[in-house]
Length: 138
Image 1 (cartoon, rainbow, N blue to C red):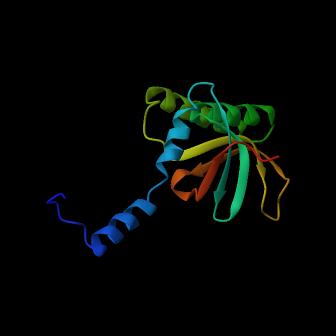
Image 2: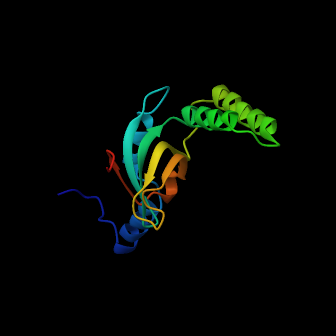
Image 3: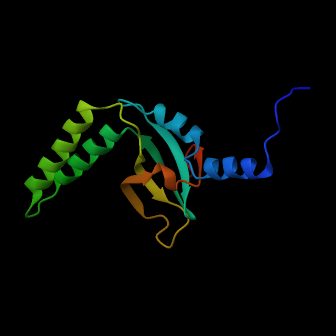
């Protein structure tokens, strides 16, 4: 037997409360696989809504947003193009900053009144993800 003291129930509960208020460390592992042009199919649950799509790097997500803006014609288009170009430059200056969001493309919302509505791009805060699965729902 070890001489170390067993943690009290309060210590266990405090540790548990701290753990459940943090994003799932396995989600960070999955995020680490999408760098450069690598991508991974993923399905996530956020507040009861299920999103299924392709997880991409933040840079790819920014580039895809820029492409969508460039294809449209609206009054302040150039300011939006400049904005996304600035975001890409900021990303390139510090590509290894801590991730705060999961970036997806070709997203399908599964369990919501807007289900089956295709969404091109989606960004979800990591601390909002309740559950995830590597793989895509049909």
